[in-house]
Image (cartoon, helix red, strand yellow):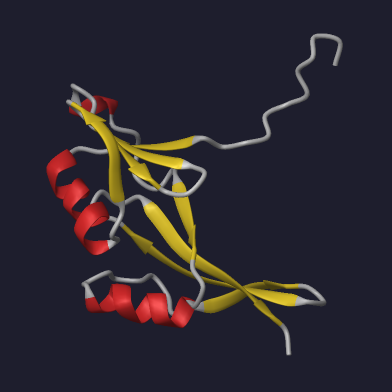
Length: 130
């Protein structure tokens, strides 16, 4: 590391390219409850903890990245409560909450779904093993 660079260590923003910014904003704001941090024409940033989430509608539809290449993961304190609340708001989950990995101390639970643009999202919870 002679130049002082030791590698990338922190994600600051996840940008999702969308075809319809208005409809996608409605999903993120009304359904998921995210608060707008700032916006400019074609681009909106949300408060999302230490990582900013941005939606970007390119000028040309051909510039939209193929759906499903990005996954945004949201930690939740209780995956079953979050799953039920989002499902009640119309979120169509790809599966029920399920364990995807375990270690001696915990289990990682996940429930994936897609937004209106087809981006893969999921909610996760790490539960202590009993």
